[in-house]
Image 1 (tube, helix red, strand yellow):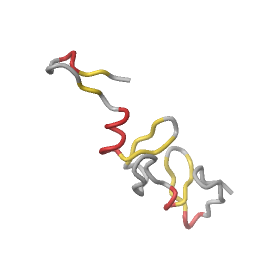
Image 2 (tube, rainbow, N blue to C red):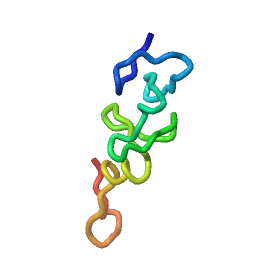
Image 3 (cartoon, rainbow, N blue to C red):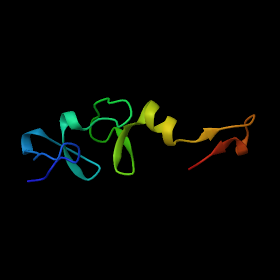
Image 4 (cartoon, rainbow, N blue to C red):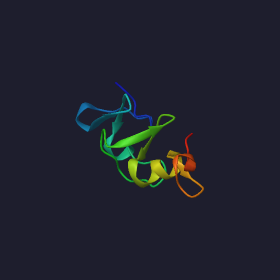
Length: 77
């Protein structure tokens, strides 16, 4: 029986949500920053942790702006 990566309890078939290559309980699949409950496939991941696409993932890991625009105005990590 697979274990939920968040709570480490067994995940039964009826309550399973598969995301990031793992089986989760539906209430355990939440954004690491804001706590919003996520659905399978509608979020991003960073270092194996789920984040909602907007605004959390983009704000934390997306391009950072500087300067006055143009091609040199973004940094990527």
